[in-house]
Figure 1 (cartoon, chains in turn orange, green):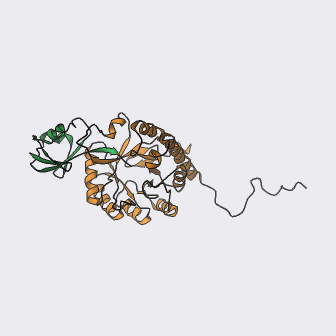
Figure 2 (cartoon, chains in turn brown, cyan):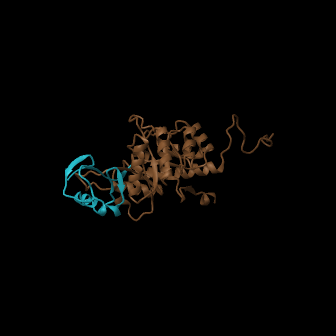
Figure 3 (tube, one colour):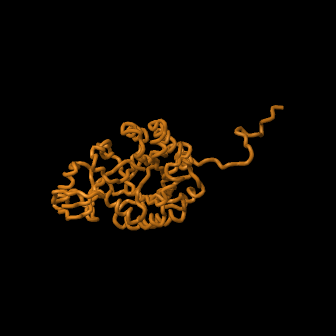
Length: 261
Length: 65
């Protein structure tokens, strides 16, 4: 079967799952762990923050993930410049947990849209420092190509602003980005439901990164499973090759012997 | 000595980064330390002295997308 050899390769790692799952906003650690299991995700994203020194019982999320072989993808959220993103990336790598980094640089707090210029700068620096860099960027084919040329291991254009659930605002661009790319394209941010995920996968992207649509669903565990199945369905549909759209009907049984007289 | 830890000033009786980590009850926890703008791996903490008025950041992984 085609899917058995259909693995995703990023930064020297082979992934059986095309689902990158964020770990924020879940109602509690139990639901989060169940959702992670239901998602089948192998790559989990995190943020880096100051420890609350007044209450260190408010512990790291990692305590709930022991003994599991996930790939950790810390992000640089909170960074407003390339320098800040590089600083956060170095802190993340010093954890010893991962040398993967999701470059995420936003200035506008209302849209949280990525700053593509700072993102490119940070990507250039971090690639030179040996990180496996996955930049989150705008759905612009030119900047996506530039990030690939800078050495990004995968490029992650947004479907829509973070947490909006608006779905793919510009499917034409996402399709074009995939056509032009020589590295995996992961749609990151803005998806809302399983139908958005199928659309992304049918456009040929290599995977999707989601957090809010799973964590804030009424039933996050069930939604995690729905998203997993949508990724699989969309991927199979893409690989299978859909029919071309036609303006008029064409009968499934032919028309030649249609008249019984 | 006076240290600025996570943006707040503290008067602490410490010598090394390890002492700072222990002071805040973070020994053995998945903590990352930046001191004076440099990131230090945990193996370096016990042998790295902190300086008066140094800016120290103690960070960890939290949920995020």
